[in-house]
Amino acid sequence: MGNASLKTWAQSAPRLISVAAGRAAADLVVRGGKWVNVHTREILADHDIAIADGRFAYCGPDAGHCIGENTEIMEAAGRYMIPGLCDAHMHIESGMLTPAEFARAVIPHGTTSMFTDPHEIANVLGLRGVRLMHDEALMQPINIFTQMPSCAPSAPGLETTGHEITPEDVEEAMTWPGIIGLGEMMNFPGVISGDPKMLAEIAATRVAGKTVGGHYASSDLGPAFHAYAAGGPADDHEGICEADAVARVRQGMRAMMRLGSAWHDVESQITAVTEKGLDPRGFILCTDDCHSGTLVNDGHMNRVVRHAIECGCDPVIALQMATINTATHFGLERELGAIAPGRRADMILTSDLRTLPIETVIARGRIVAENGRIATDCPHLDWPEDVRGTVCLGKRLAAGDFAIPAPEGANRVTARVIGVVENQAPTRALAAELAVQNGIVEGNPAQDICQIALVERHRGTGKVVNGFVSGFGYKGHMAMASTVAHDSHHMIVVGTSRTDMALAANRLGQVGGGVTVWKDGEELALVELPIAGLISDSPAAEVAAQADRMVAAMKSCGCTLNNAYMQHSLLALVVIPELRISDLGLVDVTRFEIIDLFEASS
Image 1: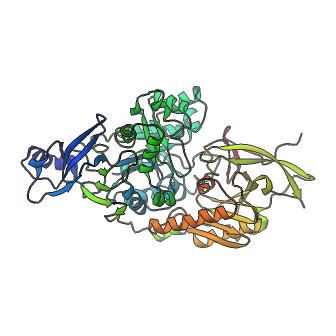
Image 2: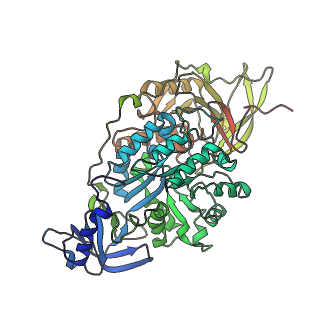
Image 3: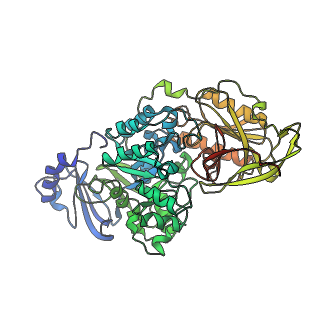
């Protein structure tokens, strides 16, 4: 699995043995460092590491016998030598980047292994999109493993996707070289009810000897949760409190605690280890979703590890949760996740374990970044032209498409409103009394209630589903539109002005997808995402700069939420409670059914 330039252990074993024995010379020896051993939870001072064929050959107190005339010597000078960091669950598309550009962005932050679920592109392009992501992932100088998406659509009957994933697709993907398992099983009601399609996908994964990813987005820890655990998912990242983490590890699942751009779920769960004293082997750190601005400006897994330490976790335990625990979970303990003989030589040199400055990054035995600067190539796939024209609106939209007619004769209505919760994926199901003017229901920005619309963009039906949302704090006349709308990836438009909503939607139809912010009839920011309407193959720094302008534009429209873009992008995610919007209508995710926008009058 991985880049063809990396020899397998079997191919390298004779040389690794010879180097460790002193019969052959290493390619690289790192001398005089503090070896952070995540197997034993020790910090061993004055140790050397010898590397050959991109793998660790010798890890011990003196590698002098491994040094030959052509061996490169690197002085650790007392710095800590830690394993390259692993992201156990993440979506490359959330970075708005291709796998190559995502790798380029995270390598300087010390990430050397990623376990990615490309279910965003699967919803738009189907199995073909997954294959394109998988193929570019295998070209990279770091380890990018792909989980085959399990749920497209995420909730059958509640949304319409551009493509569907079938058990036959899953069975085929399990034969691909970079597939590590099944992506998050979001259709947890389907698993609980014994849905044959979901169980067939899980079975195909288990037969292939690979890992089934979980997604149990519910606070119900009763029989439904136990039924889900019996269905086979090996991990879950949807926990938001200590009780969630404890429940998962007690059932033999790994609790994946995430710190992404908008999901801050580490602090509330890591107390299961730091205070309750549970075995940390059952806990893993991940990001889930990070947009390009976070990656370029704040970091990646180094940011998560630092945060876990700030939350009271022992630094070496935090490192275990981002290295060996992850590797073990995916059956790769003998391949990566630790500085130990035979493993891929993925290592970081850092002068401090708590603040974790990423000073030198080695991947597969080569220096790939130093002091925040990339020092390697990240090869690009030649993305075909037809994946760039996926936004099909079917017509030019007008302000009238975003008008919400009131029930006949009504002067006021009680509307259901999607309530955004800062830094969390779940929403709240709210209700608000709204005024009717000329037969049209109006939002109420003074009460932080504006309009939301889902515009069908896969088949050009021209359909627009309208509703209301609260929590963004928008003021004045504005609109924000995005073709990133997990997981169906239709177009989500939020605004206070129907005219601006139409302008924003049409703009994305014109450029082939992305994110745009409008105010008073003028465009303030645009992030172009031409591939599937989800990602760009432009350099990460350029996309991050566009994303920064987008965030600034949202703030200029009154939005003060942390990473509000991520909240915006999840408003159509019909597998996380409580209330969402889809191309079929307003969705009550606690009951998994379509409901009316207006409450019945008493």
